Amino acid sequence: MDHVANLNNTADSETTGIESSPAQKLVSDNQACYRALLSRDARFDGKFFVGVSSTGIYCRPVCKVRTPRQPNCSFYPTAVAAEQAGFRPCLRCRPEVAPGWSTMDISAQLAAAAAALIRSNLSDGDNVAGIAAKLGVSDRHLRRLFDAHVGASPRDYLQTQRRLLAKRLLADTTLSVPEVASTAGFSSARAMNNSFRKYYDLSSSAIRESNATHLNRSKQKKTALEDVDTGLVFNLPYRAPYDFNFLLSFLDTRSIEGVEYVQNSSYERVISVTDANGQCHTGWFKVTQAKNLPQLELTLSSDLLPVIATVLTKVRQIFDLDADPDSIAPALGELAKDAPGIRLPGSADGFEVAVRAVLGQQITVKAARTLATRLVARFGKAVQFCDNPNLTHAFPQAATLARAPKDSIASLGIIGRRADTIKTLAAMVHSGELDLSPHAPFEQTLKTLKEIKGIGDWTAHYLCMRALHWPDAYPAADYGVMKALHVSTGTEAKKLAEQWRPWRAYAVMHLWASLAADKQSKAAKKNQGGQQK
Image (cartoon, rainbow, N blue to C red; front, side, top):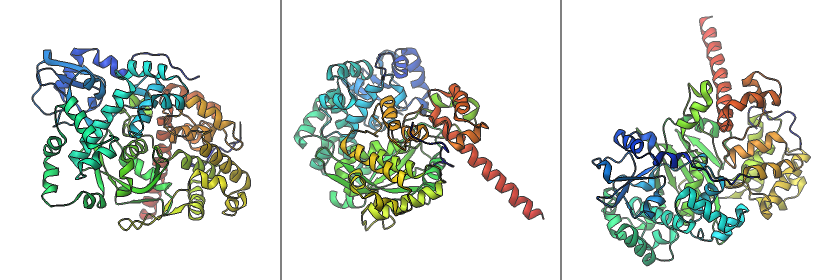
């Protein structure tokens, strides 16, 4: 799949102890937080929030209002913790757009997984027992972990996320108040307004009127539906340095015609999201780099309005926007010295990445891309967007490939045993036996994958890198990894990677990047030599 997949790729307890997270350790030092607040250093953005007792407001550490006196400041690791302490969000710095924490910022993986589940499904996120069941723990244990690491109950966290999304939609779009309430997961506009008044002492109209950009748009007399038809636009901040061009190149090299489209420093793709009621919503999104600002600009098609929360979460994962380069780069040492902004690309759908990984076993990236394009043309759902003619298909659903005859898959040039593996993966994902979402437990998923005939260590770790977005996944026997490390076996590659834990997946991206850089350098020298002749 990447460079050339593992040439020997054949089939071959999660910790729940509670300890202080880096964010909790930081906020326990009032003096250090206040110094960070004085510096206005963007690297602290999203790592903590400051509550100001004299105003009753909480802000990001990069807020440009006059710095409050230290005795009036208290510090919190998350927005929900600040709100539980009685503070309401600042209308100027807008805490809801602060970079989120990465999985490694919360020491308990379960708490992070539960938080991700809630954020991506705001309409049904208050089912704590259901979330706990998905994660394989009791709801009592999940509540205890949540309280320890987030500083609030799962339900309080859910309500905060609903309010913050609603606040963002009111400020950044011309959606009607009922549409905003429904999209953010509130039962009604009245329920949303009651929540705003209770926690923010503000009404929906006051939040909307506070945003000058929205007022300017409103003067153009555009209706909510007209605004949606032109696409909903969101700014997605990240922590610099961030190498957007590297990620764009990575995605471009592997893009499937009709599903993805890369042009003019932008990435577009079709995405399908199933909501809590089992309804599938298919639309498109486009991501570009914002000019002179540490953020990406995301445009969503109107078809994705009912699942905005889920799509925002997925896009942040695809572009690894919650990573902390200040933690990762030092751990990688010389490997990341010249390119600290390289990130770990996630996925729009774990099943899609799984199929593409199987297709890419023992062949080049280009050949795998060709097979994936054929598969989509045969089994993918045809779509038509009048505002985006380059996108024509959605990747096949697991149910579709599970039902597809093996011979139909093999007829596309896919060898029989890989067609079998694809059908097995599809059946397991469709039945729920296999979870390839970012909140799935790493160790158990890795074990389950390796038990599937045709899935070896390389494919399993690659899937955990891309689908689960696990930062310490490491396909040691990858041809490109071994070549970059100048070793001949996966065992040697694994031994050398011990120094990079728990960020080995990021090390893989740097190793692949080094091969690409070497290739470009040799090509440049060859061209230069030809010109001299």
